[in-house]
Length: 322
Ligand SMILES: Nc1ncnc2c1ncn2[C@@H]1O[C@H](COP(=O)(O)OP(=O)(O)OP(=O)(O)O)[C@@H](O)[C@H]1O
Ligand SMILES: [Mg+2]
Image (cartoon, rainbow, N blue to C red; front, side):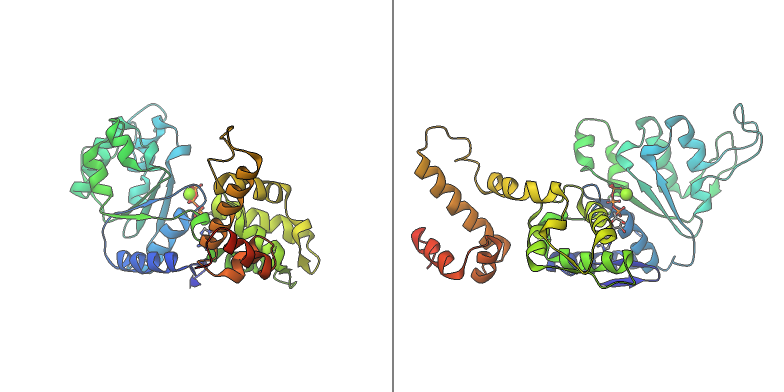
C-alpha cells in the first residue's frame, strides 16, 4: 500500500509492485508519460501519484477530460484566449496549460483529441510555449504532460486518426496498467481498503467463500466496479459479507464465466459425446484453478470447492499429478 498525502494506491501483486517501481523512476524524470489501460484500472490515480511523487508536487495538477469537452471549446480551454478573439470572448482568459504552470497536466482520454488540433498541441509540447486564441505573443510554459488512454494509440495512428509525431512525443514513457483480472492477488487488499473507507466505524469481514467468488469474477469495470460493489455491500453488511450478500451479476456470472473461459472447444463442439464434454470441461476447470492458484493444489481445490482427496483423484485421472 502506498499512501501519498491523501491518495492511496494499492499495489500488492508482484505485477503491480514491479509496475510501481517503474512509475517511481518515471516520476523523478520530467518526461511525458502515457498511461494506457481499460476503464477503471486507475489511470487517473496513477497520474495523481506521478505528480505527487515528482518535484512538481507543490505546483498545480490540472486534469482535462477530453472526452467531455466539446471540440469547439477545446482550443480556448487548453490554450486560453485574448479579449475579443471570438464572439463571446469579452475578456482574456488563461487556458488550462497556463493554469498548470510549474506543475503537471493530465490530458485524459487523449485518444479523443481532435485531429485538427493535434498539430497545435504538438507545437506547444515541442516549443514549450503557446499562443492564446487570438493572441500574437507566445507565452512560455513549464508543464509536465501526462496523457491517459483506454486504447492503444498506435491503432489510431495506423488508421491516420492520430498523428504519429504527436504519438511519439507523448509516448516517451509508456505505462500499461493491467486489468484487475490479471492481478487477482490485489483484490483482498483493495476490498479491505474500500471497506475501511466506506465503513470506518464498523469492522466488516468477508467470508473465505465470498472472497473466492470475488477473486474469481472478471471485473470488466476493474477497480471502479470493485469499489462500487464494496460500497453497496458495505451499506447493508452486518458483521460479515457472505456469498448471499454478493450482487447477482457476480454470483450468476462466476460459474458460467469460468466454464466459458475454461474451454472454448467442448462448449461449442457439437460432435463430442456427453462424457467427452464433461471430461474436457473438468480438465480445463482444473487447469484454470491451478493457474489461478499459481500451482498451489490446496488452494486450487478450494477454488473449485472440492475436498483435497477428490481433487487429488481428479488430478490422477487427468494425469496432472506428476
Ligand atoms: N491501485 C489502486 N488502489 C486504490 N484505489 C484504486 C486503485 N486503482 C484505482 N483505484 C480507484 O478506482 C477508481 C477508478 O480509478 P480511476 O478513475 O483512476 O480509473 P481510470 O483508469 O482513470 O478509469 P477511466 O478510464 O474509466 O477514466 C478510483 O476511485 C480510484 O481511486
Ligand atoms: Mg479516468
